[in-house]
Length: 79
Image (cartoon, rainbow, N blue to C red; front, side, top):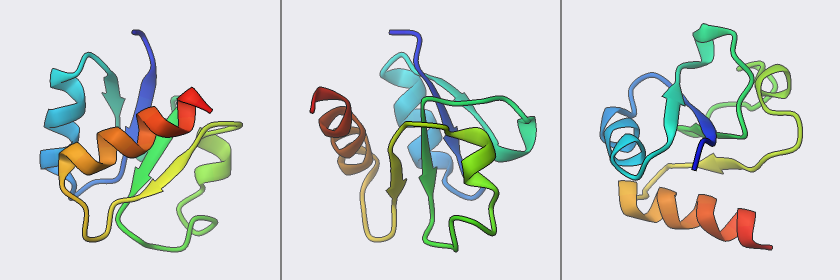
């Protein structure tokens, strides 16, 4: 599983959990493209997400546990 997930700064528990699940986790500031993104609820356009994630899911992590974020990402890729 070599999927790359961009995770907004401030979501350290999510970053750690996704890394434990085998994902490559990068920050938005890295400039790398990603297969998915996890945000904390800000305006998606303001964060420049369209430049990072072309056709992947963008998950709003507000009120979610790291496990919930992981399930949401997995669920988007299975459909």
